[in-house]
Length: 333
Image (cartoon, rainbow, N blue to C red; front, side):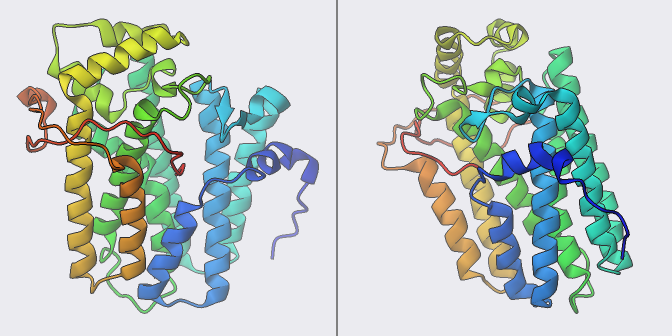
């Protein structure tokens, strides 16, 4: 056991963000995979703590790197505690989580922890580089980034669990976990630009203000390569609601939200197929169904042709789907 004594005062930014939790999707996923892996319950509690600490610490850093104003409806931690204290706190929590993982006394779990934190930071770094250079990635590049940035923590959770199970194949759940990560991130990208919930708040279309190349934005840039308006809006880091509405209307008209919904539908099919291949899982299927219903709602569908991306940008199969506006509160992930 470590002799280190945690200074609770240093952890104030972490406590602050933890006081307003999200919907704990990662914790729910751990519960779902426990039905397959069947590891000791005491280990489940430890792994949930590790994943929660890493997730909330990464949000503290993300908000600094993105220049965010709000997180879960509250002012971001660094606007209250300052950037130096918040950044140090986040790094401190990373190592608290590492210590907790080390105390599990499982070399395989520790290897997973290190490997996936490396992946997470590589993906985050790529996302930042594209944003700061105002350089739009291809869909393939975006996918690889998401599998690092979002998939890293998902794989850390499941991989650490697998280290305590009788499962001999470390890659048995890899395809499902990666597809779940991609679905959740693209869903989050969609909600950020299509939710009416924050239409008049500072967080309305925050991805545009942050200059972020999210999935719908990437489609729009590549679908209209001769039109630079979206790149210029991203470059300005605008907080002007009218400008952001114009950007959303442009993406709507070019079929980017249709394309995103079609991609989500395709990923959901892949998830369901993989769950079936692994023997079925009612709780996990129900979780995905609930998340999917929140972004489809009861909107009337209109058949709209989705413009294909140029070959260099790589697109998924062209399909048709509804243009959907999310009008009800949506679970943050």
